[in-house]
Image (cartoon, rainbow over all chains, first blue to last red; front, side, top):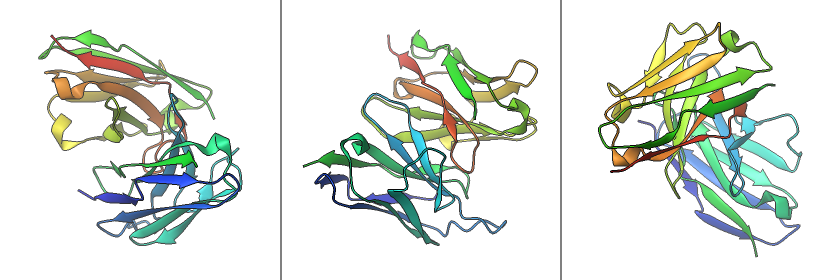
Length: 112
Length: 117
């Protein structure tokens, strides 16, 4: 199985500052169809997960442009610019290239 | 974009069975592969199973193969997860999600399964 390793586990951030979350996969996530199926989710306290980014860098409708995804191969990053109080929660990366699909362990973003 | 509504969770004894349902609305259900994902109390997300839009192809996480069966009824816009031989470590909130490789553009609110004697 592809292991998804996120860091850090916990990320205290000052309001208005930027935050970056790293996600590394144990195998390349480039699919034979040429796409890289690396997705990012946000889970606010008490809520269902919500997708933010799909295929590395495509932002979902309604997601603020403060959220951006980048990376390739096995190394990916979610960046949150100008962190707001509403961004508090756990963030997960997930790979959809190889079966079984797998999630990272999550990064908890909190306000300092 | 659509909506998903899970149901069927509850308290079940170890070794018991449960059938979860996920009712879809607001999109052409048969055009989308669907996922089940679960989250144990205080833990992260764990992928469970996926099914193609036509139901011709199914996938399972290894520890659930042989115990769980995913299916769908496109005439009823409903996704199912039949869970047999349930164990304490199957206790979780179970979510259905629209789409598979891209992780799910729409998720339901989840249904809680508790396996305990």
